[in-house]
Length: 108
Image (cartoon, rainbow, N blue to C red):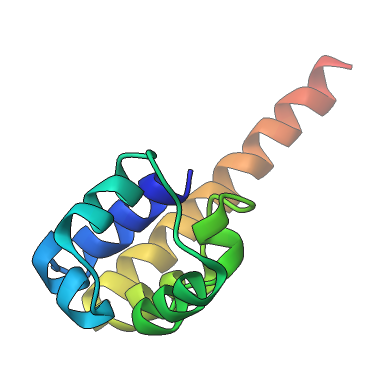
């Protein structure tokens, strides 16, 4: 689980194996071993990874599928137009939900 999430975070940050290895002063094979699920980083390395990539430990450890810290960072990169589309989609879902709710009431 840690390996999968680490790989996702690393790729979203546009880092290659070498980038992470150099930043953490570890070997390339160690990074590949972590991401491949053959070994896991120590506690201190986990803390370093979380701080470096601004992610929560819950996400990295697989306790949560959604990382609020990473999500906040990703949302801050959205354009004004992107935010408008998100708002329109939310409004659509609310409208759709109210229509479905109305249909359910009519059936009963």
